[in-house]
Length: 208
Image (cartoon, rainbow, N blue to C red; front, side, top):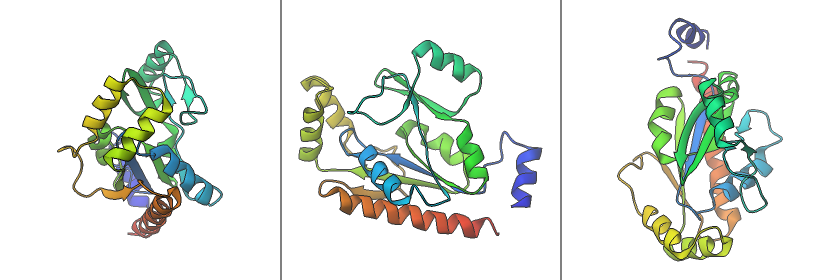
């Protein structure tokens, strides 16, 4: 741990955080990423060592979306320029950001869990030595039904999202795939198992 801290202090721009771990959750719209993350939060939230990241989004929070912090686009860009985000990206006309504080949590040895865009995976992989990608997916029929039921997209947008759900060459080969087509508990417990395994690995790696 001391060696990692010295490396980070000497060259903070290039040295990845070697304590803790970052679990990046990706997957198509309608796969239930936030549902699975919420399941894991309910199972593990009271246990030390897990940090469920609260994203900042330029979209109002509601019962139909994830529980996130909301900023206007102007406020978001101001925060971005001020260096308040560890990572950020744009998708579907919205800005998304992960608070800088997650690096402090990981430095202390926590496993940080966040729903992110595929496009930010290379930057995350470079930033964290212990980096895991979990791809939450579901059948085409289930995705279509979920997208239609939430009422946020018209038919054309649903079709575009379903097309993006197809296998993507940008998807990392080492991603852990979890199918959430069935009962939430099945996929949720599989995700919890991944997080526990990641926490155990991170704890061991800190001693190396």
